[in-house]
Length: 273
Ligand code: DGL
Image 1 (cartoon, rainbow, N blue to C red):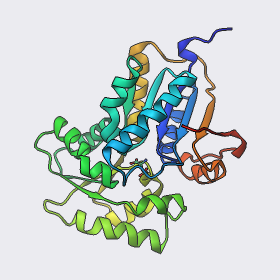
Image 2: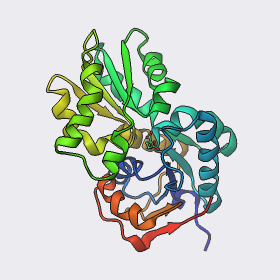
Image 3: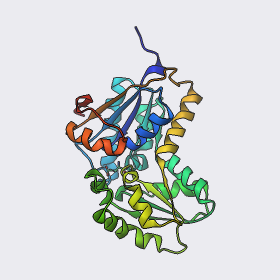
Image 4: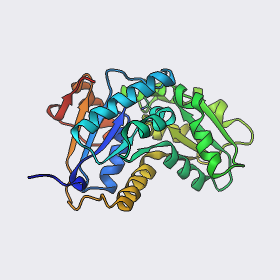
């Protein structure tokens, strides 16, 4: 029996487990879709690597997903979205490719209502300036400041998302950032790992600062694209599959923090890219 394009999974790609925050939002918004997630755990982190290396890794990983048959690619990694989208679009055309930066920027602009915006992300994302560009394309006069917060990635992966260590690390980055003038009122969590630290980030940022992340808005963007292309799966109970390039046990254990649901270690297939 041949399977129709609509039934093909949506490929979701991240440098590791953080993109599971986007998968979580997609499972909530699009429960009928089949999802195939690839975490490039062997080569994590991407955030400290050069743009050329991230582009090469992202295209290789995306090809591994397209080789299995997907109807759309979601780049659930801010670092890869910030530098590799043009190369991915070119390599995979006509497959639709959606990154997380534009939906995150749209969410920030909608929440900002003209107030200044701050972005925390990996070194690579900050250096590339993709959030600043995306936000100011939508709202040219909006002040945007940004700060790399690389230490928050391993903290999230260790599950150290609350308590003194997490608070000190978050404050180390946020205190100077939020003290810039004019004071930012919106804080974009521009890295897939940061939603895991949301509670601590909110405590440090204080009640006057609204947190924005791109997971929910990316799920909305995926839904809109599926509708526009007539690719919505008519099923109601989508299946999730997981691929990792290394350490499947760690993927399932740590991945639960980001997915918010158990991942059976036996369901994580190791792939070599
Ligand atoms: N997934 C990356 C991002 O969203 C964070 C982890 C990494 O540095 O690879 O930017």
